[in-house]
Length: 214
Length: 373
Figure 1 (cartoon, one colour):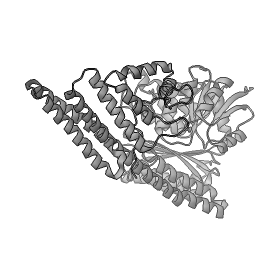
Figure 2: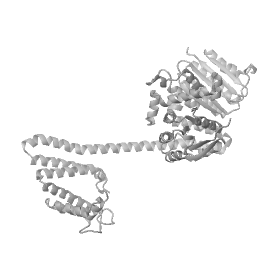
Figure 3: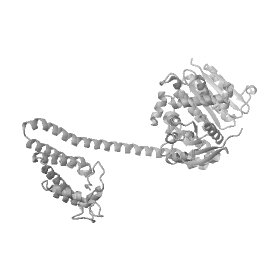
């Protein structure tokens, strides 16, 4: 199975971190551009039209979500993968609701990051254990129902998948454990991502409001 | 110390200078025309027309000559500016009389205006602010008194005076109160900023700098020290998320994870959803979890352990997972107390369960569960 070469743009205001990512990413990923601010990133991404943008949640002149909001309407095919040291739920939920296809922490290894980039490029969602924990918290049953039950609740299977992600399982291991295909795991995670972005549950709305996203 | 700056207007005006080029007298009209981008002839005509209003145009011209900076020079001297302002007020009075307003209205208006300007500009007089403010208020009162006495007709006394007083008071008090509020707000914000800066400096000094010093002394320990530092900083930066309240289950699990990181130099990736009060059964769960983490740190051979605490809706579950060496559960010697006693025994004594799954080469997962009693 040949893996297509993915073109990515790296947006992070720390030179050291960018250098680290450059050194660690696998050969199937090519960094075509780098930026350290929202102002630099937006025209660069529009110009280069990469497959994936690796996006720091915190940038000096705005934040990851500002980049997504400005780029996404013009370049709907560009996928965003958020990357952060932050543990704050509103940061994570905020950038996901702005349109990122996934969230990983900066402690991630080079191989895992490469894998996550390919996954996002293929249209799948990438959840770190921590993001899975936040989502389970936000969609906890019984409290804060929104207006659309289909969007505002997780199915039993989605909950199971998220719990396994939170436990540190990889997609393949989840598939084996639940006796489903890896493809099905992907589609559950994508469905959760969609709910995360569109649901009006008040926890999510509150997080988004705090980040002034709505 | 005190000096009167140019009166600031709430709108921005173009900077006007008298000019040399194309001037007829002092260059006032050419200067104004240039700044407003109109033919200076119109400006001259305006001044000439105003001159018919009791000579207001002449006085206004003198005022402008006094107030506008000479070509290439900075703002004129203070005494000259004060003179200019007096002339300007005089011109305004003349103009108002010229268009037919009676003295009984013009003079009170002038006094009122002067009083309001003085009151609202009092802050710029430094130590003498209070005196200036009182003077301004006196002028306002004088204006009202003059107005009332000059218009001592029946109707104006009963209807206009209270209204005039109220308007005058509002005109003075509102800007004053607004300014006061703004000053207090700015002061408050500044105090908070200073305090935050001091707090940050103290934090960086106590923790980050100390850690960096330790790492320079003993690089072998860098990983453990860096991780401890990271944990401390996170707890400080995101207090609501990363530090569950003391005395709860999530708080105790986090403390146990931190201990294991500290003792064994591994990274414990802890995710938790929900929380519960830390009762006796919860304490047993935490101790069992701690033992499972310690086992993973000691025997797995990898430096990362994943822990997930799911404390929602009655049942509490906790998972400790590593991707290390693993072992064959059947082959474990009966005397390995760690697994048998510290984990399984503890859980069973409080009515919980412990499952241990391990595959050689793939890692181990310990699953602890407490159903609600």
